[in-house]
Length: 301
Image (cartoon, rainbow, N blue to C red):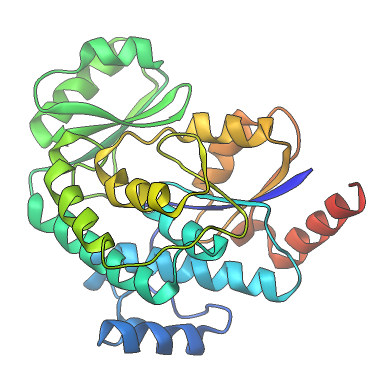
């Protein structure tokens, strides 16, 4: 029976999210030195209007909270992240150094924002299956995320997404919600920025992870550093297959999945994929509950 730490993608970020991190002063000092700027200003309302700041905040927060659990004796058997969450997952798994992750994520955010500064984004469609939604896609729209069997996300231009959303609601979708993401992630529109990021990865040394690193794009556990680097570089342009990844985790005997802050979106999605075990949002449940559940699980091995 195994423990999984999960790391969210863009969406749950909020102003002030870096101000009360565990051992926050140390990790923000480290980030500031690497980035050459005040990391504690990345979570201001103005800063969070930009993709680069959002992604850096999610990286820093995820690593800080996971390190705190590790310091208290909770070592994961597996890590996984949705989109940008794959980066803190790789850091915590030991495949990618935190300093390198900061530089790569800063570049990732810049490339994504520069490619599509306005007029594009993501929209969640709730209540339709993939087979029902795909025929509704038109020009300039793509399936971006398969988060659950009936929780999908499309990417594309504002006009194209609205057209698909209207059709989806007519076809019986419960909800169509424009997400707080300003770029058309996880589709072919980001192939060129992904290739540029892949070039930057050539100057970075990744290592074989200490624990299993589960790709949110392919649903596969990857161990080889070159495969992890490819997955991280190109995940911005590849469909997220979170449901498949969590089914795979459950099949690999993960019986406790703990979502790192901020938010609890992945907790709900993961629960839909699990047939057994506990699923917990650290932000909602607290570290003491996470440690108690982990200890109980370890004792049952």
